[in-house]
Amino acid sequence: MWTTINNQLFKEFYFKDFQEAFAFITKVATISESMQHHPIWTNNYNKVQIWLCTHDEGNVVTDLDYSLAIRIDKLV
Image (cartoon, rainbow, N blue to C red; front, side, top):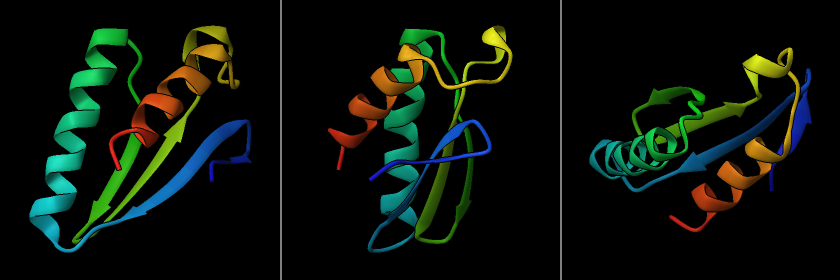
């Protein structure tokens, strides 16, 4: 489940290993690029953390963030 923290959607994803986590990041990057909406993320071995907000709207959560979150969730 995505949570809202400091005007951003946030979620952690856990994978079997680094390779699986990196494959997920690659898929998210492809979707993000197609939407021209890029997340903030970190990756530490098998854990990926993603923050979503719309910078052009003043760093708040918008429908674009929710749309990207839904598409990301479909990857796992």
